Amino acid sequence: MKVWAVSNQKGGVGKTTTVVSLAGLLSSWGFRTLVVDLDPHGSLTSYFKLEPDTIKNSVYNLFHDTSQKKPNIDPRTYISPTSFDGINILPASTAIATLDRQVANIGGMGLVVSTALKKVSDEYDYVLIDSPPMLGVLMINALASCDRLIIPVLSEFLALKGLERMMHTIEMVFQSRKVHPPCTIVPTMFDKRTRAARDSLQALQQKYPQQVWASYIPVDTKIREASRQGIPLTIYIKDSKAGQAYSHLLDMFLTENSAPDKHPVAS
Image 1 (cartoon, one colour):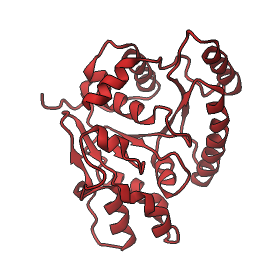
Image 2 (cartoon, one colour):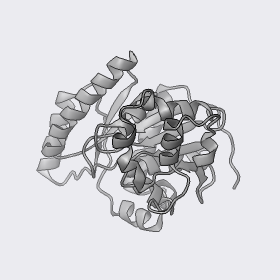
Image 3 (tube, helix red, strand yellow):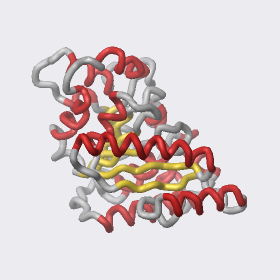
């Protein structure tokens, strides 16, 4: 099982879109996929038609039960199916916004997600984590769990300043892990018609030449349409511009790593 965290300390950069789009591709290509929502906004949870304000079993319950040292915690208790074959979700409830205050002084809380995922490692080929846009116990869990880090970044200069903070955070966390998973910066919402976008992309490539993906996710109105329908873009309209870009991105990831064997899902 491979675990990929999609993270950035700046909001609105396309984290949830990236998680959903890659999950849609992975599932349609025959990979058993789990998505994990660690963002208090619950956008990923809402995308799959679950309600963060009222959901009963969520990642919040996983953290709460762990902090209470409940025995024999089964992560499957908190995982829900989606309406898409091959995609399950560990959803968020709005209550996770209070986790830092509740569990900050309890030892071992930075490894809650990692521990839970190990218990279901035989059931999924890929796990995609939607991280919160702030440093805290939830982001620490995402970074501590992942085999690969994906950082969506808007093609604008203000986003580049935010990226500096994110790279500093990554370095701190990965130093404590004593491992450095591969990190890929993915330019998002790129509009090649504007000079500002082209200049910011060039600046990004110059500053992080080893980490920046050679291509980009273009501006695409189909992303909004797919979100409104609650369908992954890569399933909703397979030949959309952004969908094709995500397909190329996933191809690169799977080529870099020996992908797990596919497990056909029910149709």
